[in-house]
Image 1 (cartoon, rainbow, N blue to C red):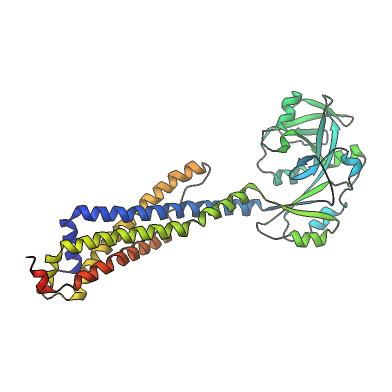
Image 2 (spheres, helix red, strand yellow):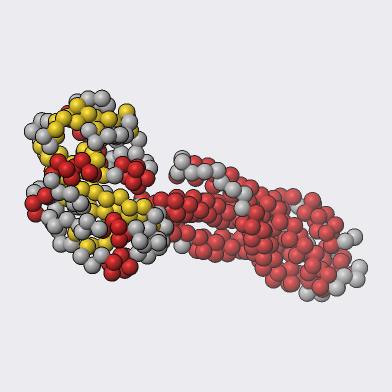
Length: 380
C-alpha cells in the first residue's frame, strides 16, 4: 500500500478523531481568513474612495479668530470689516501647481435674513463647488443665474421657503432655485449664491475669504503651498474616509497577533491529538516495523495523515471564513461592495495550515517512528 492509502485507511477507521482535528484547524483558519478578508476589502475600497476624492487643502488668511465655521474654515461677526482678504491672484497661483486638480474660491459674509436673524452667505463658483462636494443632493435645482440662491436644509425649514420661493437679501430679491438635502454638517444652515454676485453686492471685486483646493490622495502639498502663499495659512483637511482608514490600520495591526494565536492553538491541538494517536497505534507501528517499514517511512505515514487533514481544514476554513466575512462586512458597512475570492489568500492560508499541522505532528510522529519493533509487538 502507498503512504496515502495507509493514511486514508487510518482516517476512515477513526473518523471522530479526524473530524475533531479538521474542525479545530478549520476554526483557526476561518478566523484568520475572515479577519484578513474584511481588512483587505475595506482597505481596497477606502483607498479607491480616497484616491477619487483626493486631499482637501484649505488656504485662508493668516491670524484670524472666528465663531462660525464652514468647511473647516472659521467665520465670525463683522467679517467684511475685520478681515484682510486673500490676494486676488490666489486662485491663479494655485492653478500653477501641477498636483492641484480643483480650486474652489469662497467669499463669506454675514447678512440679515428675512426674519431679522443673521445668516452666513457663501459666495461660490457653482461648477467648482459641485465638484468639491459631490455628496450634495438638492431639492429643486442648482442656481443658474446670479439672481438665484441655494438654501441649506435648516434655513429652508426655518424660513418656510422651498424651491421656487423668494428671499430678500443684501438689498435684493432672490429666487430660491433649490434647497440642500440635510447633510448633517454646517452647510445645512448656510445660504449660497454666485461668487461674482456677492462681490458686486458688497462692492469688493476680487475679494476672497478662503480657497479650497483638491489634490491627489497623499500628495504632501503643505510645505509647497506655504512657500507659494507666504501670506496665507495652509491646512490639509482630514476627511471621513481618511479617519476610517486610520481605524482600519489599527484593526489590521491585530491581524499578526490573531494569526499567531490561531497558529499556536492549531499546533497544540494537532500535537495533543497525535500524541494520543501514537499511544493507541503502538501495535500498528509494531506491525509496520515488522513488515520492514523503516523509521522514516513510519514518520511519513503520520505526517501524510496530518497533511490530508490540514488541507481539508484549509479548504473548509477558507470557505467559512469568506462567508462569515461577507456577513460581518455587510453589517459593518452596508454600502461596501461585494467581497472578492482572494485566491492568493487561499494559497497562503493553505500553506500556513499545512505548516502548522506538520509542525504540531512532527514530534509525536517522530516519537512513534522510534519505537522498538519488538517492544511494540508485545501489544499484539
